[in-house]
Amino acid sequence: HIGGRAGSVSFKCSDNLNHLIQEYIFEADKECEEMIKIKKPKAKVFSYCLDKECGFRDFYLNKNRYTSSFLKPNKNNLNFYQSINGKNVLIAESCTPEKKIKLETYSLDYLLEENKIKPIDYISLDTQGSELDIIKGGINTLKKNIIAVELEVSLIEFYENGSSFFEINKFLNNN
Image (cartoon, rainbow, N blue to C red; front, top):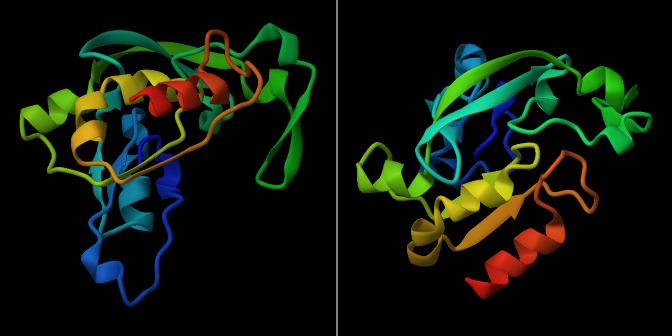
């Protein structure tokens, strides 16, 4: 799972099969690593920040850390509400960056080619608008190993220059 703040992952399976699954959780915010390990003790936690390519990129830590992203929120949506943990919260309040940090980024293909992680067959993403870039950075992996992709995606431009459902769907269908 990529974007695993607090150890929240979407993949669920029967308790009878859990021993067959090795969870990898990627979270760009290194401060979350211990919290994830407590919630998911069997998971392997990586503080790698995944992107389209290896390099460095600005990352916005927002007031509500669950909305933190490479991308700024779309100003047209700031006066709308979103539901976070069952509460309606003004987007302007939750998505306002508190600080900007520079993170080193890695592509999924690079991590596998360099044996930093073992091959994976299922991928889930919740990365606040950067899902398509991460998929592009793992295209060889997706073509070779991945049997399923699950992701959170928006039908509107929630983040400036963020990928939409339609863009991601087209890219995956073409590849």
